Length: 162
Image 1 (cartoon, rainbow, N blue to C red):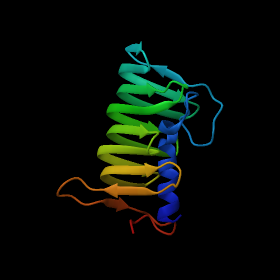
Image 2: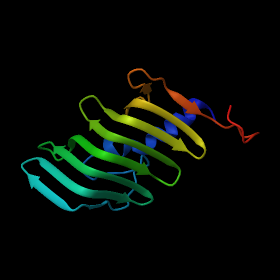
Image 3: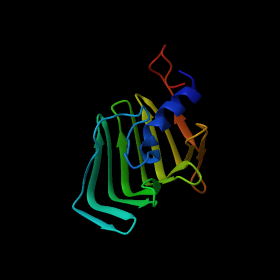
Image 4: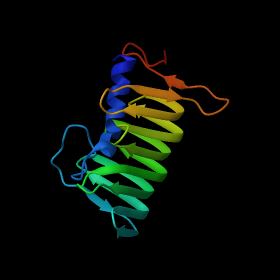
């Protein structure tokens, strides 16, 4: 599997943030219901906020965080969705962790920051920040200050990292 294909697959996993008001956790337009739970939920004007042990489930996809904030436009679409605090996403194939994830509809990006780790099987990449452009599939990894991007990849021929 090529690096580009692997990264595209892993970052499609976070496209749950790029959905419209029918919220989808996975990129294949799932018709599965979305189940959101948290210790509290508050709705005012065009803002929805879930706090405390937030868990979003759709099919096999699961997102957990401490706080989930959604800004909703007048036409019912998400303008921004922000997950804050111990953000973890898994769909059974890929897993992504970080401290903050933001979908911005205007820029059509998903940004995940602070100690980002992306895993797919044994393959692992870490960075300070990932920006994923929803429409083009472009992915940009940037390091934390004073650090570098790291990737650990195994070939199909060996169990040793390449």
